[in-house]
Length: 412
Image: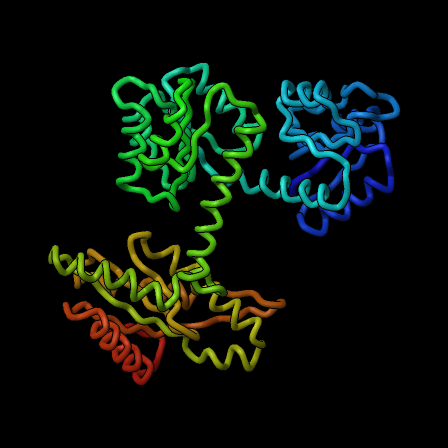
């Protein structure tokens, strides 16, 4: 569980912050009312995920608390009621995450959202492309303060290779002038494989050219930043672009995935399955459609309750997702029925793969409210070339043959 260091001399305001954080975030908040208390907590507890700091304390009024947390490698957010340009400059020079004014509930909401953003950044990879090591390292440092996973490249070709090897990258930040392949050409090549709503690209340049930003965006970039830029502007633009990509991804997941199991839904299966089916048929590659159904699923709901039934479906979905490849399509078709499009498989080993799944399910123990639930599945397979609809119908018929012939078996 993440630990947050809160340093605030007002008990009432501290309690307000703690309640706001704990309502939204699963974390432990350690409160210190003074510099000395904070120093003791840092020395005793250590390993704080983030620090929330009031700079004006009874025993420290000139921002010494910020030096304490940064020395202990605790990324920090400053909040204060008195803020001026000198203090703002000092905070950014010390590479804080952000600063927040004590102005009311809206600012508390911002603190909570900022902490959640930093937490989620640990799952976000960003690629920095710049031939200047100094510039690249500066941008990397800014990103690491906000806890992004950072990769880097000193040229466009290297950047494209890293993108191919790291599918989790959500943002590319690229300089304009680079040897061999400039920023425009890199963006064009990126857009040949990734759309704007899959991967965000921010162009950067020190050239004082007013139309450079428009050229970057027309070539496929999502945004542009002119050098030199302030830390504040950099974080705003990076955060906004990452959040847009995540929101689009969330909308796609809502449309394409089953809410309970996280697998693809029936609609997506027909959409993507149709594309894969046409591709495999054109290249004369083998494919299989498998229908899997939980045996006596109604008994699970009747005996243990619908929560147990949901747990069974989620456990089975996790097993299927782990067993099949990313190139296969695993979908919940409805109820306790699942459908798999498995491509590039020879007909002689398809049944053995689903037989292996059957055995894995048979050995699965699902614990719900101290009850151990055991299940089996029946499967029907089709490997004959036909339309996707007909292959599904054949697999469905074979599934019911498996049911009629005793369940817990695979029929090809």
